[in-house]
Amino acid sequence: MSTGTGTRGGLRAEGLRFGLVVSRFNQFITERLLAAAVETLRAAGAADAALEIVHVPGSFEIPLAAKELALTGRVNAIVCIGCVLRGETTHYDYVCTESARGIMLAQMDTGVPMIFCVLTCDTLEQAIDRAGLKGGNKGAEAALAAIEVANLARKLSPTAAGGRGKPRRSR
Ligand code: INI
Image (tube, rainbow, N blue to C red; front, top):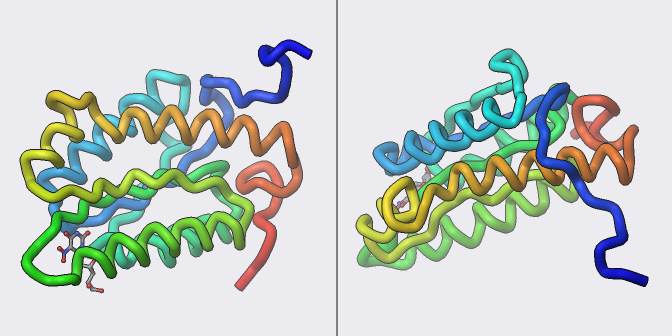
């Protein structure tokens, strides 16, 4: 069997609906990630009306908002956007760990694909590089991943992934 065979998600977004849950903490970075994600989704054919943006205070609050949005059944995939910068204390570790774990739990609970676009950086400079300067923009990469997994979810389980079918669990 050739490795070229198999099921893949496409990279077109017509007819798909996306949630974008974005943290205000380190907004200087997260608004740039959000802008690139929205631009990429539009360029792939997503309609403006198919994009639902939800704002939360910090990355720690992303998982619950993403889960609630998934449970509405209105979206096929969700891009979770945040930026955690290492400080003097261990707070960074808790926020990173729980945000990542919560987003994973939310997607496994609901069956709606969620993309982890939470930057976890030692310095502001590293974050700036990943939000549009040297390292490209992780928001754009996250949007492409969202399109791919939304298409894949439809193929693998047309009635279970959000949007066209029902999310797997209510509360
Ligand atoms: N939230 C972030 O998104 N990034 C951070 O760097 C950050 N730091 O450094 O504290 C942060 N903290 C807030 C946290 O996400 C919650 O909003 C807060 O703890 C209230 O629950």
